Structures are given as structure tokens and as C-alpha cells.
Image (cartoon, rainbow, N blue to C red; front, side, top):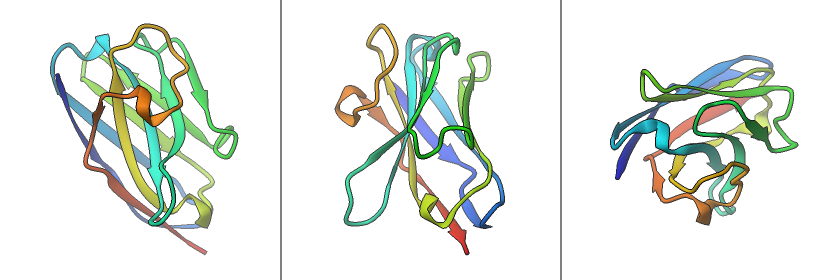
Length: 125
């Protein structure tokens, strides 16, 4: 299995940027497709972005398309989420997740097997 640890969250003003990182340890990182999700208290966890095993395919929720970029460095066992033009509605706990299913396009939380502990992102207006 794989262990995931997120970092990079914090407080930022609207319009600002943050880059989240998710470091993986355990089994070979490149065998996992990765995703970022977010959750606000009292609401369901929401898909944000996903990336294929090689990094060749990425996909996004409509709410973040054009503002967020997911990437990965398999040599460093790390996946990133670059968040630009942040809005107050982006405020949430952000989680990275891993699945060893083949293919890509996984945007449902039940499709992922491993989760990090989360990192808080707060965007002030």
C-alpha cells in the first residue's frame, strides 16, 4: 500500500496562489493514478483534479478548470496542485488520494483506495 502526506495549505487572500504537495511512500508511486479532493464541513467530499499514472492525462472539476493545475513527479514520489486565482469558495480541507486501478478519469471518492490526512486551505475575501 501507499502512505500519503499533504502539505502546502494555508491562508491566502482572494486572487492569490498556493501550491499543495502530496508526498507518497510505500509501494511504487508510478503505479497509482492520483487525485485531489476537497471537503467543507457538513458537505460531501468534492473532486478537484486527477492525473494518470504517467502524468500524461489530467482532468479537472469545472469549478477549478483554468485556475488549478495538477502535476506529478514520479522520481520524487510527489503530486502537486497549483492553485491560482483563488476564490473564497475554494476554502476547504484538501486531500490527495491514490488508486491502483488502470486507466484514468477517476473522479469519485470511492474509486480511490488511499488517502492523506488533509491540508487546510483558507481564502479570505
